[in-house]
Image 1 (cartoon, rainbow, N blue to C red):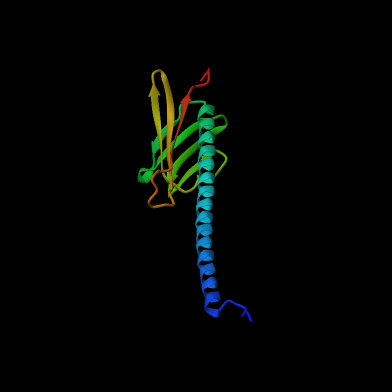
Image 2 (image 1 turned 90 degrees about the vertical axis):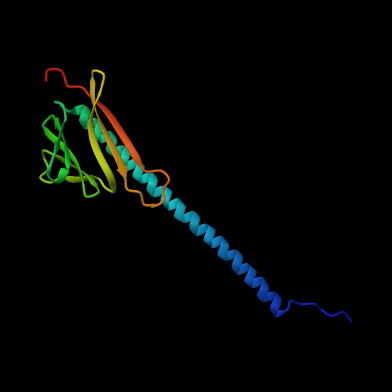
Length: 162
């Protein structure tokens, strides 16, 4: 008479242990991919926000009716003054943010948050005087190989009659 062969309790425990190890490795890989994906999404959003801020700044420099002025405020904070139709727009960097204020606002508004460094420079290229904005966003990674740096350039052309 043939004896039926079944799985022993020890064999079943070994299968369960192997299955648990495989599940743990799969979950770990999924978690790491999820963290990386969130980081990439956050970085993409910060890049888009920085580029949009740069384009808005360039538009306001182009709209200026007189040459922009760079002034040093207290504590070495640089203030960029843009005379625009109907008033003036100012930009400055303080406390990890780029601040913007126009004639109609009583207080500056955080124009771009999470900024490590920001500087405005007049720049002459031949007969054209332009402005350069160098911007470094805060990096969330301490071991980042590439810093999030941006440079925005815009020529200033005074409107005719001014």
